[in-house]
Length: 378
Ligand code: GLA
Image (tube, rainbow, N blue to C red; front, side):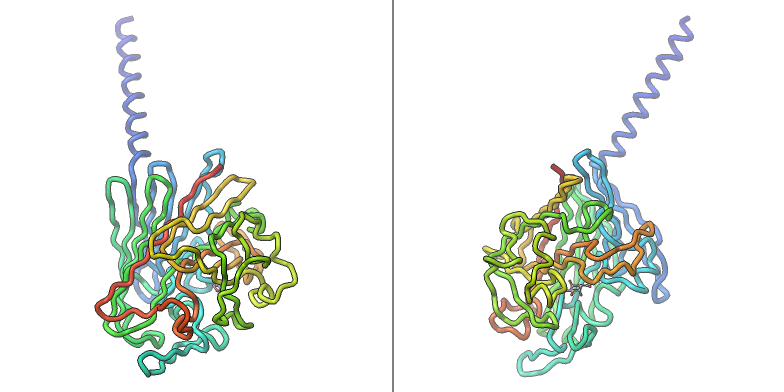
């Protein structure tokens, strides 16, 4: 009898200890590194960041791509909510900028030309006659140096890259640093810093495609709120005309949360040019402080994301060029409008629009910008 009691006591103790170790493991912030593949004869890695709630963000130092990002639904179920691929090779071969860092200049520069201090610069053109997302080999297609960073309440990855003078036609050696940080409050913070040795345009952003249904259907039912009274109309090649047009009375008014699909197919010249939404919104109250400027809510799962930024604009792209020709993670086919992209940035083609806030970084200055995506459910 006594012996049996001892066995019982020891087993109970073991169970308690096991439980403690499981909980502590779950409660810590972790970062794990594994090989993702080879590119240009060099190894690219995949870093898995996990927070105490169990949210997972996987980032590769190839293009600084967010490969996986899980978010909770209203039943607490975490599911991957970003588009992308399972293998590095697929990213290298054919990616519409899935999850990547975009630079040196997010979005388009008209005809790949701009003049700075009397000198005309010619950039690589990779989007018809225009320059898009940094050119032929933008920051989305290069290997970054990676270093895990940890504090008591966050886990993160610091990425650095030297963009050489003349790369894709840009002037100046640009030292770039992007730090991704995951908190226990389900926030993913992106902090971008850059310095240069010659004046150059800089406009960095991230190009994650979100789908809060977990890619079960398109994003047209997602409700979007944007704190913007104005947007930038474009020409037929998606270059801003220079006008800051009021959203009032247009399908671009998201000042009340509205389903993305509610007006996307109405007869509107701007929607025709973009084949849907592919425009930059002028965020209200821009004062370079980080503030809540946008949210997205998906009613069937209850998932939502809040976007905090210090940027003057957000390019909202409704996945219009996705056409079912890409099979992504787990073989899921990304059909028309299966992802939405929210690129916080300065305005496209700013170097050619003196009335837009300047995107020129000068030697001695530091480019610095922060965007936070916070995930939850209701
Ligand atoms: C940005 C552009 C779009 C498109 C996508 C990627 O959002 O504005 O026109 O190029 O990137 O396909």
